[in-house]
Image (cartoon, rainbow, N blue to C red):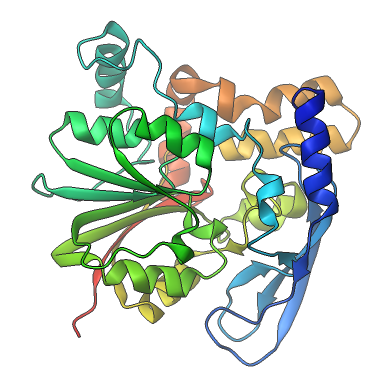
Length: 333
């Protein structure tokens, strides 16, 4: 992948040169007993560094270790980081009456990939962690929700703020919100990025109202893709993804933080699999084919998702699409 312009490239290189790594124990407090799985590198921006994925032999939770420290990992989140760009509101989408908005709504009636699947719930107050540039905040505000966000990237957060929404800037681990209470807390592909997922989820448990719901999506390392493609798995995303959950380990992490899983839905989307074949092709020297396949998650869009939807339904039923959305509620005190 091509890096940003020269000044940005120099800035990223400086940041990466200042990278500090840390080795941490299992997030669930298990006795040291890790099994190394494989070593990978940053494939999204081709930034330097090799990182090992290990798995706790006691609880099964996989993690990246050693990993970048919280104060230096920002080098792997440049301004052109995909989620920052893909969640920006363009002028066509800024109005709920626009043709594009109506077309997307029409398509969603027939193609539900479950990426943002929400439980039935009355309109109330919502917090999105990792809200990026604010597209989901905007969608929920149009539906009548009072929305707030938390975002690690100052630039992305300012873009969301420009839409008129309250967005706190920083890592969730550092954000304090005394007295905060929400009916719904969501995080789309965020928990795997957190240095302290148990502590962060425990903090969120203190912010949820009675009968409120937590909804998160994460890559599913329990899918065969993880075992087959290993370091070439598209959703491995090293070193940004610090944890690699399956249905069992995410349930254990949520329980340790005071949550109970009430439903897990696999995404109905084959983009992960196609992009993983792209990484494999790149490593085999078939660059044009590899680049085209690896770009499918960003460029395939709803047309690609629609064409592959029948296969995606079957793969989701088999639990093999590589991503999942988890609904949870707070455990009784």
